[in-house]
Length: 88
Image (cartoon, rainbow, N blue to C red):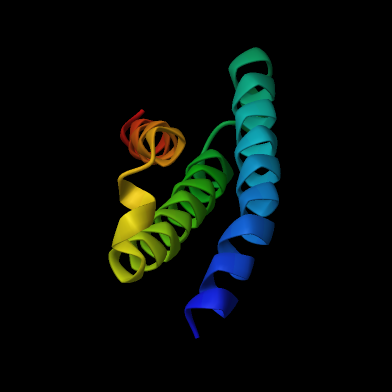
C-alpha cells in the first residue's frame, strides 16, 4: 500500500508542477488582459493548490509509515520545500 502511495507521490509531482505552471501563466495573462480576469483565475489557482495539498498528504503518509526516511537530510529539505510551496 505504501509503495503505491510513494509511486503516486513521485508521478503526481509532475502533475503538480504542470498545474501550477498553467495557473501561473493564466494569472500572468489575466494581469495583462483584463477580459481574462475573474472566476477562472481563482478556479485554476484553487485546483493547483489542491494538487499541492494532495501531494503533501501523500508524502506525509509515506514519511509517517517509513520513519527512517524522515531522518535523512535530503528528505528533510524535500518536506520543507513541499510545505513552503503550499504556504506560498
